[in-house]
Amino acid sequence: MKPFISQLFFLIITLTTIASQAQTEEMARRLFDKHATYREASLTQRRFKQKDILPLISKRQGNPIYNIESVGESFEGRNIQMIKVGNGKRKVLLWTQMHGDEPTATMATFDIFNFLEGKNDGFDALRKDLLENTTLYFVPMLNPDGAERYQRRTVQGIDMNRDAAARQTPEAVILKGLVDRLKPDYGFNLHDQSPRYSAGRSPKVATISFLATSYDYELSINKVRERSMQLIVGMNKILQKYIPGQVARYADDHEPRGFGDNVQKWGTTLVLIESGGYVGDPEKQYIRQLNFMAILSALAKISDNSLTKEDRDDYYKIPENGRWLYDLVVRNATVRQSGKSFTADFGINRNEVSYSNATKFFYYSKIEDFGDLHPQYGSQELDATGLTVEKGKIYPTAYKNVSEISKLNALNLLKEGYTYVRLAPDANTRALGLYFTTSPLHILRAGQPAPSGTPGLGNTATFILKKGSQVKYAVVNGFVYDLENFDIGKGQGIVE
Image 1: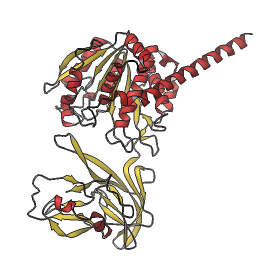
Image 2 (image 1 turned 90 degrees about the vertical axis):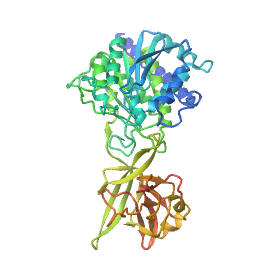
Image 3 (image 1 turned 45 degrees about the vertical axis):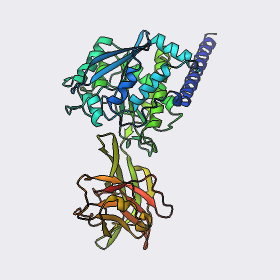
C-alpha cells in the first residue's frame, strides 16, 4: 500500500507543478500580448537622458501607491531617485543603468509602472498579489552622468559594476547604502550586453542572458544563490516561447569587485539580466517587451513563492554566452592578390558612433576578421561563392557637398563598380569629420586617401563582389546591396 501512496503523492505533485507552470505561461502570454497598452509612449528610442525620465517620475509624486525618495547625487550632482511601490513582506530592489549606455530595462521599468497603475484589464488579481506580497524598490537610472554621454562608465571613468568593494564612485556608495538599509530579499541587476554574443556555439544571438552571480571563488550554492537559479529557470521557460534558443547565461566566475557577486554575498538573492540583440530590433523595443514580461513574471513567482518549484539544475542547461557572431559574414569570396587567388571569409561589425550630443548614432563598419571563419556566424550572411572581391573605384567627378552626391543615381554608380565619391578641395567639410550619409556610397573628403590594395583586415567594410565583369553585390560601410534587387532602406553610407 505504501508504494501506491508514494506514487499517488508523486503524481499529485507532478500534476500540480504542470498546472502551475501552465498558469505562469498563460499569464506571461497575456502580459506579452498586452504590453502595448502599458508601453511608456515618451520613450521610443534608447538614447534618452535623465531629463527624459524625470517628468515620468515627477508625475507619480501624488499617486498614493508610490513613495518617491531622493537617495543621493551622482558625481556631477544629478539627483538619483528611488520609487517604492507595494507593502509586502518580500522586499525586491531593482536597479537599471548602472552602465549609462544600457537602457533597455529602464524603458521596461516605466512600462511596469504604467501596468501597476492599471485596473479592470484582467490583471487586477496579479497587481493585488504583487502589491500585498512584495515591496518593490526601483532605481531607474543609477548612472545618469554616463547616460548623459551614452557611455558605460561613470563620468569619473570608473566601471561602477567593478566598484562594489572600493566604492570610489558616489553611485556605488548609494547602491551599497540601499542594500544595507533595505536588506532586500531579492535584487535585479539590469543591464544590456553586446548584440554579438551568441547563445552557446550557435548562430543565434543571445537576446537575453542571465547570471546567478557567485559569491565566492568556489562557486558555492547556498539557499540565497539557489533561489537566483530557480528564478532564472522560470524566466527561461517563459522566454523560450518567444525567443527559442536565444537565451544564454554568463560563466559564473566570481568577480570580487562586482555588485552582483557582492550583493549575493551580502544575503540578497540576486538575478543579473542582460539585454542583448535581436535581428531587426536596433532600438531594442522587442527586447523591452520581453523585459516587461519576464520581470513581471519573476516578481509574480517571488510574490507567491512558486519559484521554489523550479529545478536549479536546469540553470546549467542554459547555454553559455559565446563570442561566435559578427554583424555580417561574407563567405567564400575569391580574393586576388599578387597574381594569385584564394578563398576567404570576411567578418564585419557595424559599430555605433554617437552624434548630436549622444542622442543619435550612425554606423561605422570595419572588417574585423579575414580568412577561414567557418566556426563563426553572422547575424546576416552572404554566400559569395563564385564571386570575386575587389576594391571599388573612385568616381572621377568631385562634388562640393554631400547633398549634391545624394542626388546621384547610386545604383548606376555601383553597377559600374564605383563605391567611392570624393568631395572637392573647396568643400566645406570642417564640421563633418567621420559622419554618415543616407546614400549607399563611401564619401571621401578632400585629401582622404581611398584604401589601397585588396580589402582586408582593419579596412572600412566597403568593396564590391563581381561575377566575371558584372558587379553582383556592393558592400558599403558594412551594408550589403544586391544590385539586382536594389534596396537602400536598411543601409547607410559613410563620410570619411
